[in-house]
Amino acid sequence: MDPWDDEVDVLIAGAGGAGLQAAIEAASAGASAIVFEKQMRIWESSTAIAVGRVSFPCTDLQARNGVADSNELMARDILETGRHKNDPVQVQAYVDHALGTYRQLCQLGIVWSPTVSAMAGMSVPRGHLTDMIDLVRTLRRAAESRGAQVVFQTPVTGLLADDAGTVVGATVRERSGRASRIRARKGVVLTAGGFARDPERLRRIEPRFDRVLATSGIGHTGDALRMAEALGADTRDIEYVQPSFELHASGGTSDDILILYYQGGIIVNARGERFVNESISYKDIARACLDQPGMMGWQVFDSAVYDKAVAAQAAAGQSSPMTLDANKIRLLVKGRALEELAVNMEVPAEDLCRTVARYNDFVDAGRDQDFGRQVLAGNFGKPVRLDRAPFYAYATIGHLLATYGGIAVDAQMRVLRKGQPIPGLYAAGESTGGFHGASYHSGTGIGKALIFGRIAGRSAATRIS
Image (cartoon, rainbow, N blue to C red):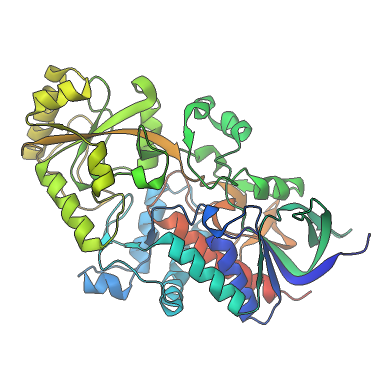
């Protein structure tokens, strides 16, 4: 084998939430660690540009908000949302380590909004909101203060294995363009994100994804998945990848994300007709929206929902998909009556009025005969009438902020090949599959990066060679 250009105990590919957490844990366990990141800046990862909700059970913040939760309830919610296609081993690992990760983040100085929210898949509110730019900056400082290095504009380009199939290092491309071989004495951790910007793979999953806007970190081109596949790694859940129904039709960043159908609104198409149960995961809603005219829908709500979202913004102290700030208010279409709203939306007024009246009748009767909506979101909240003028609408499309399938791993985040661990290779975060199953429990994308990144870093650092 050619000589090594450098060596380290744990080599980590990708400086998002998972990679930085892996570095913190590896360094805390006494291992040397280097994180290689192909982008120029820490805030270009999908963690940094996420909307900031992280799903944790049994926290002090939930208790202060009067929320009773349990690991068992969260595990059940995740499995039910994923239609039991999830890997139960990963689900159990998440809930077992969630509270410890929440407390670790608090100790690092992460500040959480005083409120918690209920979104897709939840039986109780467990969405914890924080500033994601501050989060990744804090994690980077914590990693570097423990001796780990974070190197930018230096992508990991391939994995190196010995004759026995053990991963012993990786190739990286330095800023100069030079290719270097880095030995990893303990292991390599793949945390390089998903494949929302890999159009070829997306087309194989669903040809119409060609027309779905990608809003993920710009470096999320499937690098980790390709490197693992080159070694024969198993994959999970790639067939379930879906967009998220939440982005304004003219938007392009998480600032333009709104999910007020979970607060009581409904969703209609360009004909003014409902087409989906609004309480299900926004990924399943986005899948249904692909079949609608223009692959677009409208979130429609009244002043009661509007006022609740404005109040939620003030209570949370920062924006989220469940709140209305000045930017999102500017994007709303408004009508003093439903007829005027329909005209401003350019949908048939008679049809929109009929849709809302029919929905209100369902609310009064306690039974949605069209789509079976019984709750606001997941297993939480009761539907409400839409009858308080003025009325509002938000033009909404599906977008690919992240992908939720990828490399198969076990509870120690060891990458699997034919069901068995590949020695020396680990993965965490959006690079991996198996945890979410067929759909998505809100807040667990960033959650699994933060939780599983810790597990991967410690597993690699404590591996016996």
